[in-house]
Amino acid sequence: MNKTFELIWETIVNPKEAFGKIREKKPVYAALIYLLVYGLVSVLAAHFMGKSTLSEPQNLGNIPQNMQPFMKGLLSSLKGITSSTSFFIMGLIAPYINVFLSVALYELIAQFVTKRANGVALFTAWSFASIPILIYKLFGLLFATAMNYTLPFWIELLFLVWGIVLYVIAIKEIYQIDTGSAIGIYFTPIIVIITLVILYLILLIPVISGIFKTIPKGLISP
Image (cartoon, rainbow, N blue to C red):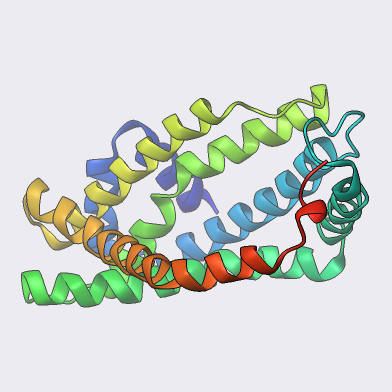
């Protein structure tokens, strides 16, 4: 446990040194403990932020009158999901699955680029590189429980950028490569996925247009 909190602090103040230690010692147990903490915070944040943001609105704004019952039912269902036992269990398991799958992908890409394998160290470093998101969730949980307030998007964006920087540093230190190569490895799957999604949406445009033509006009208009 002490090692976990030590790495959390070092990752915040000196990520290069922290990931260097992880490369040398590979403390997987510390990552497993950290991911448990991350999962607990994520579940609690989702539950309380859900209660804050998914509460039935007093004014549904510009939503058509005939769509308002549907929106109220949807919000009610989402609130129920964030309070369920299955949501709690999946919230604890999800960080482990997410890190494992992410590391499997990036380890494969890194092996092509660096000709070296270091998946165990990358698993640990990748876990701790999510600290900015954990801190954001903690702030979100605090504001949601204390003031029933949701943090604005630009604050989330700042923590997201910080997280991306840590992921790049993690790749750089674990495989001991230059910053440019680390950036290339990190963004390769993101660029590929975005490209595939855009191509897929382009192919779906005729189908979507056909569906909208079949919807009665009164259904989506006031």
